Length: 116
Image (cartoon, rainbow, N blue to C red; front, top):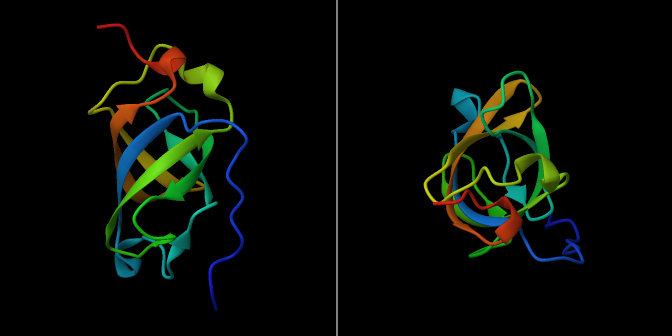
């Protein structure tokens, strides 16, 4: 089965990240995840997860247990205003279950960038 159709949002991505998915046997995805994935993310605000969509850059998918580069489109970017910076670490989740770890490479939406 191939990748489902991916429609890029009509706005630029909020940031670029490296995302390392856990292997399937360690709680990660059991099948490849494709561009267009909407996952929950923990950006360090206690008790709050934020939805975002991934667009994988080197391939249209990311394999379980592998690392992938991705553009990330936050569904509610206003909640991260002034908080993000290169090196910021976050988790990718399937509900409460952590399936991967991410690190921001570049903040592309200037409203989200933390002042130096």
